[in-house]
Image (tube, rainbow, N blue to C red; front, side, top):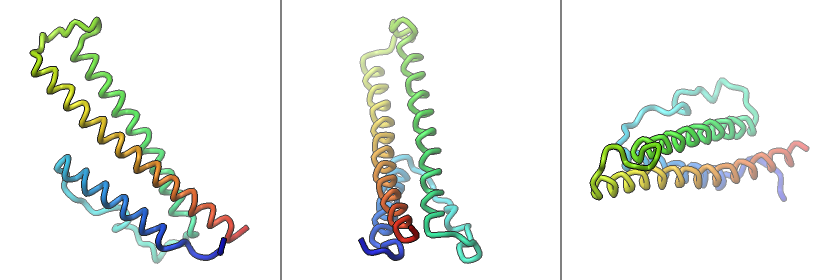
Length: 138
């Protein structure tokens, strides 16, 4: 393998995946836009190796994984509250309300699964970039 700077096509692939996902999620949840940390960070004045941003990305992904775990736990608590401790549906919901609840739960879990897929792809790309960076210096 040829050693050199991080291939632009890998960085572009990663950026495009994140852009596709974030755009889709903003539309799905009607989220507004705010300046990203990358827009606020002065890359010119920082002395970073090529691997430092990748390591920061991996740290960020670990935090996202923890957030996903908390969201799944919150959904489980909602299911318990809706069905009751003994699964006797204490609020006596109609079939339509049960169906609506299931559909809403499915949408949330689908969004979390999509985020998981994106995180896995990002991690795979990050590993390749870190390996290439290690080959360049080692």
